[in-house]
Length: 120
Image (cartoon, rainbow, N blue to C red; front, side, top):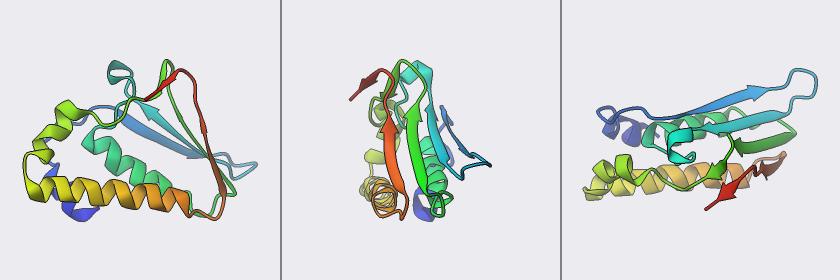
């Protein structure tokens, strides 16, 4: 995550990823929050998603959801374009999202998406 984080420091932070673990059940809830972009992942959200997934490794159940009216409309290309214009930035973003999705895939707990609205 470090190379990508350094490359994105000058990009505006848009949206957020909220993470909480329910105390009674240890269920981890990861919620995408960027209503103006239908929860498109901005570079800062990509980093926050990576941290949330890493912090969910001990949870028996992981729920990934977005605020209504969309689950996630992909990457926020407007903001990610600044990184995609350079080979170094594109490689770093690809590496980060590959790590995040692989981490989610190989969690010991059961993970699922709670889709409320459109999913692209």
